[in-house]
Length: 521
Image (cartoon, rainbow, N blue to C red):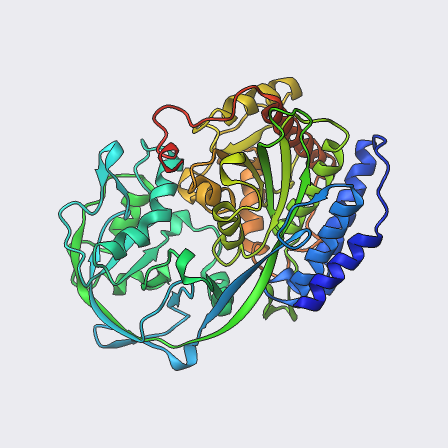
């Protein structure tokens, strides 16, 4: 690992600084695509955190930041190294049994390696509806349920009248909340009507490792058994129960109320894991602010550099190139940095290319908790992850826009650019908590993320669905995907304009009144 970091420093030391002259959008699009092609090439081996491929990608990005003339802002030059424990589920040495009947894993159930797993467990099951604890809006699926020593079973979805961001936040906190109340585990079920990608994709990625911070003092994952269950096998869980899975799924797909009830089944298991110590860096660069009164405050732009690496072959290809997830986002930040350095933002802007997003948002969580600048100086986060330029850009979905004043700023930028804000078309998908903005939200920092806007039940929605079904987290997420690169540059300009608006505003961004996310600050 040390040799790769030295390589990064060697590259940055000799890299020339590029011209500050404006570049035509078509040339920017070609340059963006060239960055994506490099980062998503087989030579990067899928950029999995803790691998030589990710080290090479980090060196490449550090070199680009130096070439653009941005300051190094890591703890070791441009890098912020993080120590992890990598953990894999050993399915060959593990076993599961449902009321005495063996369960095929991972074909039926996938065990998350992101938690401290017990060697053995044996517990009754209890159905808890959507599994959402949201007392602030009068919804609590756990009310009156004794969770001690049990495994909670819940389905995807939630009440339609509750904002998607709040439901996503409750899902993100769910397993920690369950563990604190004595539950030993959880089983998540995605209904057929809400499935994003086929179960075969989940099985294919079941051999991917999880990661924990090596420093136990900053971990927040409780000892817990977290499983995803194949919906095609879900009726086995509900054998002898008052309702079938089919009945529950129909209500969930319609966002109807779901009541909790004990299940007649119990799950037991013997779990084995393999683990090793690894290290992987964030890459951090700084564009200094120009205003003496505001330069010590920071807008943070993020994109995750890591991918899934090398995994199970699909049609003979085992390299998960991660072109749109998320080499495209890394290349976007490089392009945005090149544009913003020609301007003079009053506040400073940090470009943070985070690691281990695919292992549980760990790089961004580490930076948000242990930033390389004073934590109180971070005023906002703008995150780019898999925006998907699969169709023309006619609107922008700004995840979290309704929660903070960043939304008002984004709407104002959109009005000047002819890009209205489009609501999240699938609010039950948990998008607000599924990428790196959430690490900042947990710390009370206003944050948003960006997608090409579209509405449900449209041709654009079908293109997005097809990508998730066939290319997402698969080797086919490569540069053969048809993309609208000129529209991609328009999204970069939208994000850059928003960053400048926030950087130059007299006041820091703030959470809106009533938002549940402001309390963490």
